[in-house]
Length: 68
Image 1 (cartoon, rainbow, N blue to C red):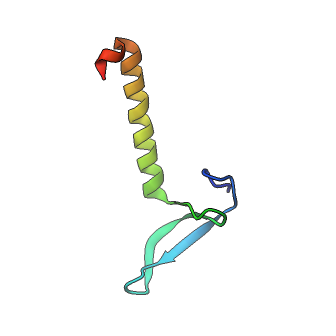
Image 2: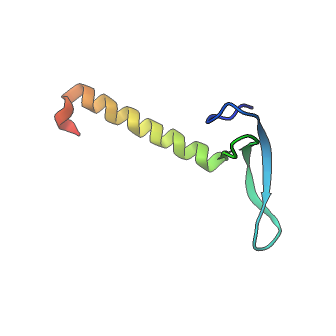
Image 3: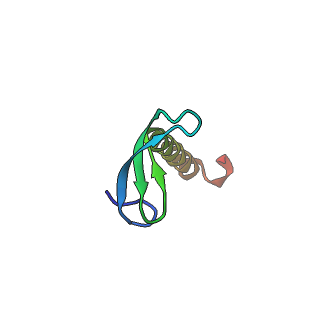
C-alpha cells in the first residue's frame, strides 16, 4: 500500500501497548518514509468528516454563502 501523505511505502503495523508491554488492539498501516499511521478508527473518522464537508458544501451551493 502507498502512503496517502507522501506516497511512500506503507506496511502493516501491529503495535504494543507501552505501559503493559502486551499486544494492543491497534492493527493498521504505518508509512516507512514519513511515519503516518492509519488504522480503522482514523479511516472511519476521515470518512465521517469528508461526508460532513460534502454536505456543508452542498448546503452552501444550494443557499449561497449566507447559509454557513
